[in-house]
Length: 260
Image 1: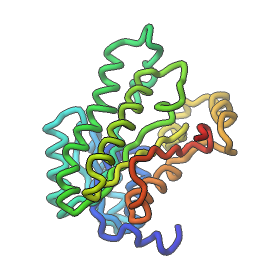
Image 2: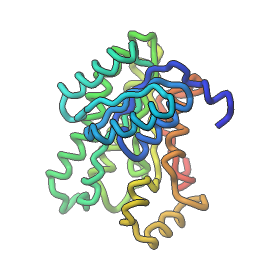
Image 3: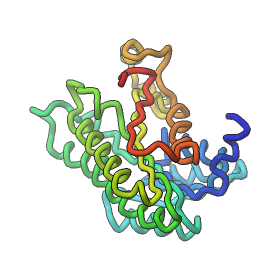
Image 4: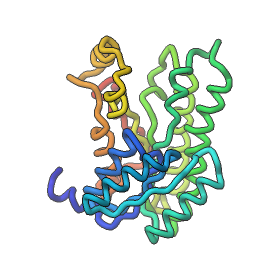
């Protein structure tokens, strides 16, 4: 990290939703390293608390709150708690997802509608509820940034995972709406769309077959798969002043899997 980046987010008040593991946890670490004060929100409060403990042990300002993004009361309470401790809100990374549903997401002909309902509830309703909770606080601060975690799946046209892809396409539409409606009020809204990212949990679990990894690498214009830090760095940029003239965009962070 360049020296200038170490202070790029100094004293910024940022909330990361879905921050107990994976991309969200890596984003928290990057934001803290750049000087932000961070609320770590996750449905798994022990996981969020563990991230907060690591950050505070390193001298950073961070704390954990519980959130269930499909529950409006839970979302509103989490944001209220975050703002009460942070004093204001300058940015949000909306990263929550129920990745368990991906493994049951098959095709439009045979997918269980319960899988569709859960996917839409978390990935789309959850993002809308977080947006509704965040915007008044961001506007009260004179503007701010929302970064959504989308996916290559929203644009790839894959032969499987239709529910996941639909939810991410809808998320991209929500993001563009926010940018269009509140851009003149100082709000930026963008999405990072990761390709296949090897999270620490996937690496530790060993459930990803080597031949699948090789297939994913073959589809990229890169020598490797993604790492959580690849995504975290772009999120940090979008939440900083370096990203203030980027609005309404889906940034594909995928090693060149999709070319636009």
